[in-house]
Structures are given as structure tokens and as C-alpha cells.
Amino acid sequence: MASPFLLSTWSFSEPILESEYPNLSAGCSALDAVEACVRNAEQDKSIDSVGFGGLPDRNGNCTFDAMVMTSPSSSGAVCGIERHLHPVSIARLVMEKTNHTLLAGTLADDFADSHGMESANILADTSEQKWERWKKRSRDTKPLAPFDHGHGQLFGSHDTIGTIALDSHGTLAGACSTSGMAWKVPGRVGDSPIVGHGLYVDPKRGAATGTGHGELISGVNGAFLVVDLMGRGATPQEAIHETLDRIVSCWDIKKEYQVAFIATTPEGKFAGGALRAGFKYAICNSDGCIVKDPELVMLD
Ligand code: GLY
Image (cartoon, rainbow, N blue to C red; front, side, top):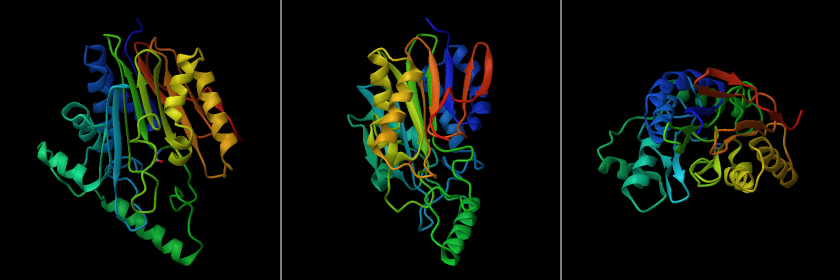
């Protein structure tokens, strides 16, 4: 059996994995570990694509989406969260306390209230300031593309956090969380809270999580496709390659589009791959913690 490890999208997650890895190697469950990692990102105001500090929709309101998953029969997710700081923990409540997989909007916030979660203002002052600047630029010039953070930066070093863990019992779990596409049309929900789109975990076949332009990931059921291909014998790198290939063949890939996946087999053979350069991922295992370039970058 592989020794425990944590795998997560984007370099910002490396210090988060490093702080959580001792708990995982001491016997904490994969599910507890991924929830703890994602909570950490959700409360970090400097990460403007996840949780508090995330960039709002075009009306200036923040909404959060998140999911947790341990198997096809065990997942929970929320979308359009408006007043709780830890959507990943509400997603876990959905998985553990209901017979459902996805709760949406203010009713999902009410569900969190009913389980004693504290309400909060989820719009950070920094997010509001960035939105004001974006709105002014949009008025003064042509409308900015979705995801353009207002200074020409497209997926510079961040987007959805997707974290996968294998624990010392050999159990896999995954979690992801996002504030969604910057300046999105209000009500838009991306890939992250949809089973098989932003995250998929199957103990027999492996786990995968996606980041980037959610519409592209959803269009091919990206995370499910990666895991299914691994189940049919592909390596993680081959499975990601075929999934990205499918995206490229289905869409007119604009220059601002980015999609990336990380994936692992149940035995702990892992890889990362992206449509474009810029994506990195983090891995923590008994050898230490590092930020890695993806094994595969499909386009220039
Ligand atoms: N991948 C995050 C989103 O598109 O919402």
C-alpha cells in the first residue's frame, strides 16, 4: 500500500499541504485531511479564487461552490453559498447528514445554519475594491473577459483548490472549493460542485480534480473521464492527456482559457496536466513537500 500523501492544485496549496501532512501521516483520515486543507485555503484572504477574498460576480456579490467525495456513493456539494465562510464543510454535512448530493443557494446557507454553522459576510474588502476597479475598467474600455482579474492576468497562479488525499488505511478522498469565475453572470455555477466535473473519487479506479474554466471541464465530465480512463488502464498522465484532447477537440480554445487536472491511481501513482503553461501543483508525501510543474502542457 502507498504511504499517505496529499496532492493539490496550484502552488498556493503547498504550505497548506505541508501544515496538514503531519496529521495525515499520524493517522488522520483522508476526508479530514482534504477538508482541513481546503478550509485553510477558504480562509486565506490572499487567494482570490477560493473562499474569503474570492472575486465576486459582475454585481459585486461573492458566491462559493464546493464538494467533497470519497466514492461514487459518497459525495456532498453546495453551490451559490452567500453567507458562510467554509462551503467545503457544508458540503461534508450534505454528504454525511442527508441522502442528497447537492444543495444550492440560500437554502444551502439555511441548511448550514440548521447545523449550527455561523453566518458571516463573505465579501472581503479587497474583493470589493478589485470589483470596483474591474467595473470602472469595464465602463471605460471594452468589457473584460471572464477571469481577467483586471490587470491582464489570466490564471496567473491560482484558481479552484482541488485536493486529494490517500490516508494510512488506503482510503482516498477529495475536496474542492471555489469562488467561481471572476465577474461571472450572477447565478453561474461551474464544474466544482458537480460530481464528476470538478472532482471524482472512485476507490477502485482513482481520483481526479480539475481547475480552470469550469464550462470546458463540465462539457466533457472532466474529472469523471480522467478516473474512468484510469480504470480502463490508462496512466494518470495518459488519462489527463486524453481528457484535455477531448476538450481541445470540442471547443474553440480562446487564449484566456485554461484547464488543468491532477489525478492519482488508488495505488498512489499520480500526475498533473494543463491546457496551457502556468499551472503547477503541490505534492506532500513521506519524502517531503514540493511544487511541481505538470507532466503535460498541451498548448503553447
Ligand atoms: N473551476 C472553477 C469554476 O469554473 O467555477
